[in-house]
Image (cartoon, rainbow, N blue to C red):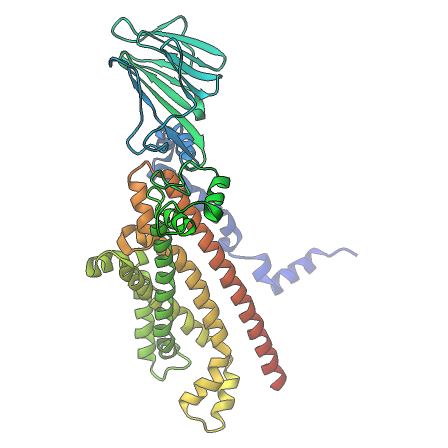
Length: 454
């Protein structure tokens, strides 16, 4: 039997909060969605995002990314000299006497540079250049005071007033003027990552290096080849492994020391800040505002302050983490204390124990696992944060990373340090997660025991 209008009216009278809800309760989801859309539209206008995206140089992105995982060699050939000879940059990855097999001196006096085998190359002398790429051949005359291209110009060749540029994709490019030919040839990988050009092991295969270490004659009198190889790797001038790993260790120590000291200071202060433990409400509020102040000043700002006070170095970084963690851990510790179960504390107090013993036996067993878990999480987080503050002079690998980025040319070195940082963060993240899981199980077992005893 269906409900009558009187029945429905009676239900509405008994439950007006359901059938006659205020307008703000009925329309708040729609208002929230509309507000979010309006805010996003405002952000687009305020930051001029369409204009920024339009004017961005997206074409540079592939080149930028390629520099992280590759290196290039740039031989230059002067055509205004009596004899054409290749010239390499001062710190070429090929060493002091380069003679790569992709630079060929032909019997007729011309040079051929193979940029990608025979498929992409340039052959030239003082009067003409022949560029081959993408199945096409471009002839460039150099006899009329400026380079002139014969025939149609393909889209991968750009002709300027005094220069012809042939871009051949990832593998490199060629630049031709009347007085020189400059080639950029790109290789995947990191050049001289193990041994630099000064090392006696430079240019040797892995098998040759292993043979020299195991049974070869001493390359340096009074030093074993194994010790010499280790020293050459550690003091690699191009990659600076020793300095990078030392700075990485500084970053780890900064994070550990700053977090540890912050936890030591925050631990007793948290008891005075917890309103259910401290006898003074004023003291609780003062300490909580102190914690708010310490953590509201970003770690980066503290780092800038301490680099002015102590000078650049890991001491400034440790101090910045220490000050930040006093606020962060003090707040989390005090909140954990305010959420404890009061029954164990009341039970200890009923035995006539003094206040210190009440905290020791009635509070600490419950909160210590939580304190350790929160501290481990902050330690893991500060390992990442220590890299950032290093960029402003607070020591560690962040400073090394910033120095490499400032040159705008050592992007492979930057990527190397980024990978090392990611590896360290990954390791410490897993260690922290493992310890927190163990502590969670300990806390769970403790709660079960307390429940059984209660």
